[in-house]
Length: 142
Length: 164
Image (cartoon, rainbow over all chains, first blue to last red; front, top):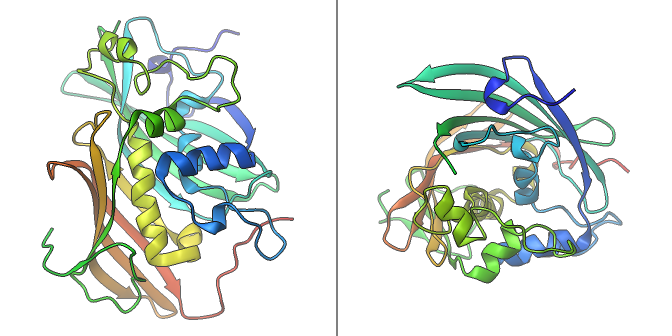
């Protein structure tokens, strides 16, 4: 079944999940992007792999990362608000999974807003971060 | 933010800081190299970088933007770095941040993360540090505003809860 366009999604609808693993190379690519080179993100500690920089977790949790995310032609979506809870650490080489669910759809000043939740978990199902985000749709985008 | 009580990078711990203290992260320049590293996708991809609003002028102007805009997540990352500096590993377990973006940050701009300690709340077994946070461009204009909190427990050392 062809996924619906994002603006057609309703509360309770879910996007296809995303599975990914952060390699040392990807982690260090983002460390370079942020000029952030703390050893916790590069070196093993207590026999455990380095930590994934939290920005990579943020980077993978907007719904645009879902394989089923689709925008209608001529429509754009702008992120407006974000609430994130950090609940655990992610480590380089560890399988991670993201799930998304629409929480609310509403109109303000003639524009369609959507609130949605994203949850990033590790292979045991433990939540690493919980996010709620708001986006507004714009028409007339090329 | 009242920056009379300013703590410059490298940032000390927030513990025992006085309410009203403003913590500053380093000024970061959003060069094309840094922006491509963040928004261009993994370097291993055969057609790197991805073409999107954050990497390609044509894509940005097609979307009605005046130029390439930096991903808000990129400078939120600078804010997170400041918060991790303040609270160390505890941030990864109890940190909460809420942000919104009042203005775009453009390729070539500079950005600085700031956090002002607004309140320390005792909940019996620990303390919750509440902060107003923002990122400002080189003109002092806010490009990200919001708040953050982190709970520090008085009991045993923080476990990272990592799985084997």
